[in-house]
Length: 185
Image (cartoon, rainbow, N blue to C red; front, top):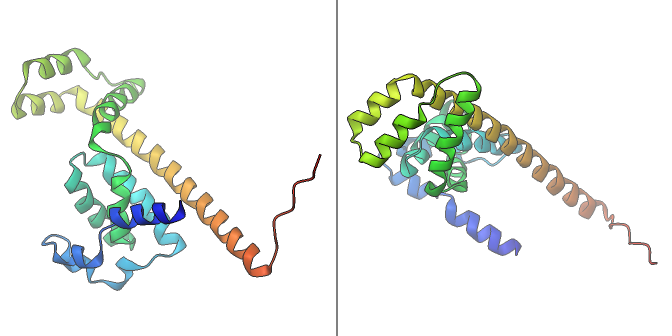
C-alpha cells in the first residue's frame, strides 16, 4: 500500500528535468532551493498548490501558477505542481457554484438566472466576460478566495499532522519503543 501511494505521488510530481525543459518555468527549475523537501517548504507547497488550483481553473496553467507562486516563497516547485493535481477538472463546476453561494453569503448578488441563461444559450466569451464584470464577479471572486483560503488552511493542517505522525513514528523506531500491546479480554 505504501509503495502504491509513493508510486502514485511520483507520477503526479513533475521531475526537475521535465520542468527544466519547459519554456516558461525552465530557469526556475535550475534553482537549488526549488528542489528542497523540508518540513516548512512542503507546508508552503500545499498552501500554494491549493491556492493556484482554485484561482486558476485551467489544468495546465495551474502548474505554471503554482511554480510562479513558489518563487517568492521559496517553495518546492515540482511538489507544487503535484499539489495542483489533488483535484480534477470535474470538480470545477461544483466549486464555481459553491463560490457563488459563498459570495452571496457575504452580500453580493451572484445572478444565478443570467448564469443559467448563458449556459443554456451556449454564450460566447464576450457574453461571459460581460457577466463576470457585473456584480456576479464580486460574488465569484470573494467566494473563490474564501474557499481557497479555507482549503489551503485545511491542507496546511493535514500536512502538519502527517509530518508529526511521521516524525513520531521515526522517533519511536529510533528509540526502540514499541507500541503498547492491547490488553486481552
